Structures are given as C-alpha cells and as structure tokens.
Length: 161
Image (cartoon, rainbow, N blue to C red; front, side, top):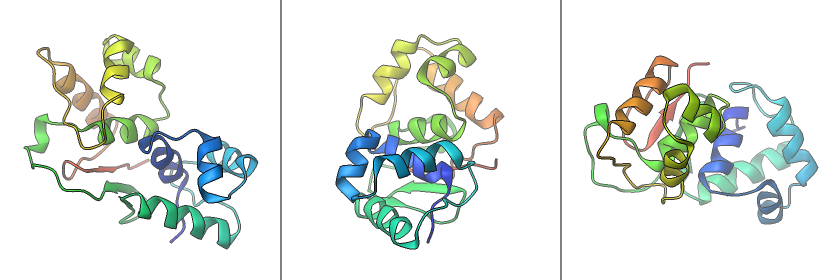
C-alpha cells in the first residue's frame, strides 16, 4: 500500500520523529521526505519510488500504525476502551491536528486554549487518554468534529478532506 500525504505527516509526528530521524531509521533521504511532506495533499498518494513507498509503509506498520484506507490511521495497541464521545488519546490529538495542518499554536487559537495545554497533552505517550478538570478535551473534540474528522474508536482518526 502507498501512503497518502496525511498518513505520512501524521505517522511521523505520532511517532515523535523529526525528518532527520525518520530518514536515518528508514534510509529514505531527508530531502525526499521533506518533498513528500510539503508537496503531497492530505488524500493524495505520495509520489516516490515504489521501494521508498514500501520502506515507509513497512516502517510505520512495524511501529504499530495501521492504514485501513487512505483516509485513516489507527494505532495498533490495546487500551481500555472508553466512550468515544468524550475521550481523546494523545495519538488522536496529534494525528487530527496534523490532518488539519495546524501547529500547536494555531490549534490553541482556534479553540481558545493555552498552547501549553496542547504541548502538555502531546508530551504524553500515544495510548494515553487526555484528561482535564476543565472542558479542554471536549473543546478539542468538538473542534475536530466540526472540521469533519471522525474518531471511530479510541485509536483511530479518519479524515474526509
């Protein structure tokens, strides 16, 4: 399977990797990775050699990421299921933010939450549920839903654009 632009960008960020680290880990040049991330629309397939596409796909799947279709990324792990209506994992936050092309600062402005809250949430491990005594998680979820993102379970993000 060939990845989409959304899947490439979001997978790298979900694994907390810089471009240079991904390049070192896969053998795909940093220049190629930069070009793919910059020039590939969310749902467009990455345009590179079949070999590089397969290397990237294999690397991400070996690191517990699944690609059910070109719209979805799923974290392949086991966590205690919680109702998806009002729960969000660190993985979902990063992937959703990436799907919308938002920085931490721009997301914080969109939902009127301090950037430090987003930064703290993203510093956790992927399968951690985000919690707050305020309604931060609800605000984040509502914003993502309003933007057309779908969370079919606690470990998946699906984009429609």
